[in-house]
Length: 217
Image (cartoon, rainbow, N blue to C red; front, side, top):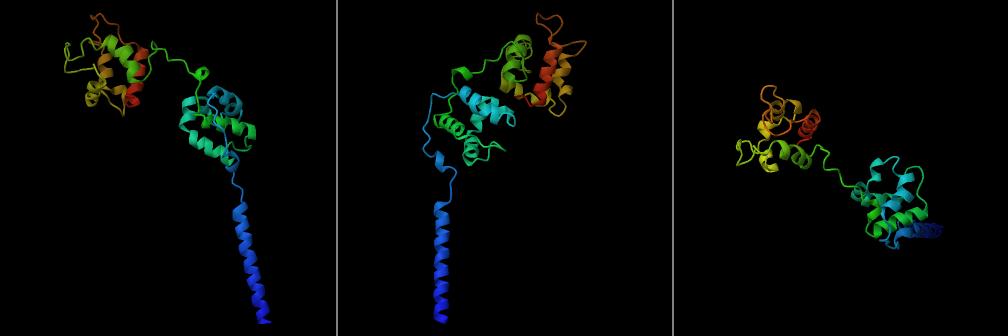
């Protein structure tokens, strides 16, 4: 009787091991269906945006309307799509997954049709490049340079301007920055009234204030 019980225990243990082995061997891998995706470098972002992202992603990830944002998250997007965890609520169809993954495998081409128009250089924005081009170069640097009338207050390069940051800018309270106080001085503003340069406009002052608040990007 003892011998029979031992045999039964041995058989049950063997069956248990076989069952565990089969589970590991045949457990479904969600990425297996996409291991042979062929790269398609003819696909462009415009196509992927229209066919996949527009109706399945952009409602939650509005920034995925922009190529640069999609490109920066491309590995995370690939992983989430393969696993089926994105988009939430309804997985992409096999065709849409294949389209998206083929585009990624082909180098995630932007394509000519998806190129965003160049910014208008005449519109001033809160960046050094824009402020330098539209304000400093036109209204300040003629005097504020190493050979100008105010060489100790050099605005001619980004580095020279940044080296004056403690004197010119108040990052915790941008409107109270010394540079803005000088520009708006009612008695002796900069540029001076008798200079050949246009005065800084209210709109430009707002942009300068925002630029300072952002930390001089």
